[in-house]
Image (cartoon, rainbow, N blue to C red):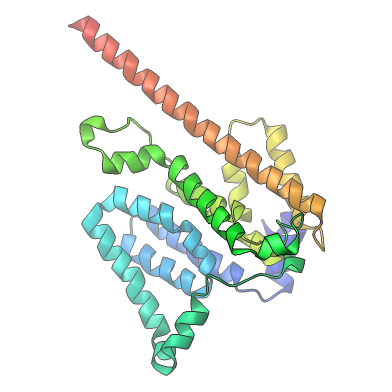
Length: 276
């Protein structure tokens, strides 16, 4: 897919960013997950995080899938494997300067430069850098993750007799949705960050109920926005509009799935009563 996007071709071929490396390792982790090799998947996922922190955007879906596949105890064990891998990778740095390493490696309060933002160019610099803006985005991010997976969260919490009759999504789609929500709510996107979700866009769009023309139009608009250098108020606005369109399509799909599942349950219960 590098040949279908000028920006992606530039990131992979002409630059030395670590984003493609982190994404490649993450994809290998997802392949191991598809093969039901959960331990290998956990180790590879941790290795990807050690290259670039953006892989943590997959973590909520990753944890959800592990819990659904393995249950609580084994999921906790695999989480420990992720942590152990991180500690082993960081061991030389923790030995030399533990405080400095932790402050720099996990700096969640880092302030990005407004001049390089791709997605928030229409905001003034003061708003862009304000801590309140970051907290609002974080709140929206968490709320969207909760809502998009609501039936699956509830199936974990509720007793089986109260559980939803809900068909679980494909593993890869589940992961891509979590990552996409994180990207859509990101405090700032820089040009190399396009690779974080570029390969997932066709799958996300074809999971919606839009017609093919709309899907291709959204892909084209996103590509146009990422190829504007420097970014403008217009390019940032249409990028957000495209992200909102994808989110709306995904939520509409989930709503229809839940309604159809409830209708199926109602019909099956009615038919069983009539037979009696």
